[in-house]
Image (tube, rainbow, N blue to C red; front, side, top):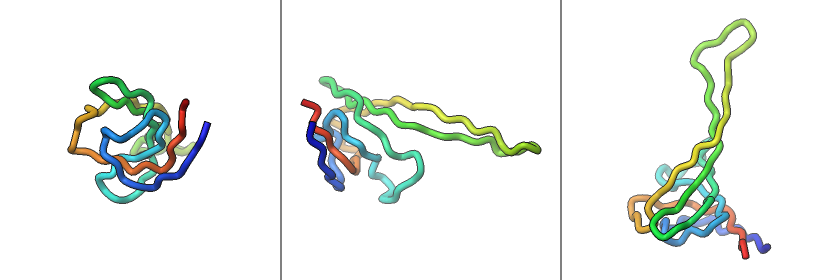
Length: 92
């Protein structure tokens, strides 16, 4: 397994399984923007990413925080999105 750091923006059609990336719509890093390309099929690229959430209120012990994983997909021929790829792993 070979790993490389691309550090560049690519269209959805050029992403590969295992890429560590973020949607490149703001040009800035945010806490939970990083995602991993989970699967690529004929029509979609499937992603998953962690997320965190906290309530907007607190109690004497602090606030309630939750974490989870979001899975979503984007059409392979989409020209609306680009992804900034941090790292690419050759999955062969």
